[in-house]
Image (tube, rainbow, N blue to C red; front, top):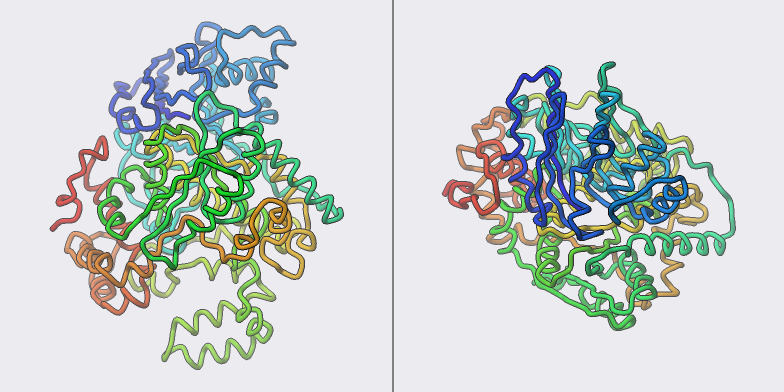
Length: 627
């Protein structure tokens, strides 16, 4: 796991310097740093976190044929050993044991079609100097980030946004439309970012830059899986088989590996299966000062069952206040997921424990229907059966209780329009409020509806596909990457293994979730591995008790930030409407998720737009908070 930056200025418009950009991502690779300037205006910078082949032979940028083909690569190719043997049989010779060198030889043998054979998580920049082609490639699920900016024929790219803000052709111009996207969903959908000049490469896509210009090519997508109808027992057998295959690859490392254990089914099954492969497993969980959000007892049940080396840490509301600015510096793409705090803290503690690789259960909910909004809760299922009456009742109480009215209208969508129900359930700010608060927040079209309609079978798998293409990539994978790499830890996601995903997406609802039972198939599989108390517990994961914290000192702190003139005077707000909204203390109780997003947006602007910090240690809290 590493990080890279690059600048391709074929016409020589700028004096290329990547030193400042590389400084900002040094946390991604503290083991080694290198800048290489190639012919024809291409420069590549790299920071290395050594996981496989710890010797100097694995350093990057790495080249073949006297720099005719050069690569920088962030991530892991988990099946590199098998690919290496395949290439040796074809006559290739290797000088290292790294997966990076395997990538170079794969390109030499197969060209860009090599992507069909890769199993892993990766962001790749590959320059073919002979053909004068540059490829920017992102893995199938967007586990590893890759950003780019093209202006006046100059191409910049990097593993993190902040590394691009020092590039000469990149501005800090803000997109109002993408601020609106963030306020609706707490994240920004690919390929956009909050900066107008900077885009992110879509998962399962690569960009080819050549004399012909720029081409975007999709090389994989899970929507193309035909439905298969097999017995439930056969489905369980095949799911476990592929999950075990995934773990055998994900456990390849020359450094210690740990497992996140949240108290949920996904991470519990992972810990159980890892214990079959590894003699001693280190597991990590968090507890909150508020017992309502404490799953540490459930995690302990799994730890005791499999005799893991277990670690449990405590998080408080005070941690959120003091750590937010540095978390936002590391997470330089707008993200309002309150899970960033527990994930940031647990990775910090994992790193202190000497662990450099950690496995996460992320992805299980999107493959096996783990979220409530896929089917609605019992109340929604009942009132959703009578959409006409529900909408009439919602209209009648709108003035008295607008929040209840909105929930009823959302429930009315469940039966006939499940995708609209899912979208409405996820939205935090609605269109009416966004139109009132600012200018330019309107979206041309809804990307979630686009993905649902693009999926051939629709139904439950259409909803899962929509989340895989949006929430999984643009929220969960972003959160996982930034909170691990902030502490020079590599996060791996075994559920996002191509054969497992393709199998899961080929199973119909009748097998995955019969009678609309959330996560039924995985729960049935887990019965063989996990204690009964865990199987019947409500879903939480590494979530912050953010709503409860908003009623205390943390809420008062947010009030001060949002009512500061620095916040009110932002050019994307209607100042009077915004001031009225953030000064109403009732909103900090009734609409706290909205106030939290406004806080994240304002702190983001103070950290990444108003200032230019080269490390989190440069951040002065009094300067960020303004009081």
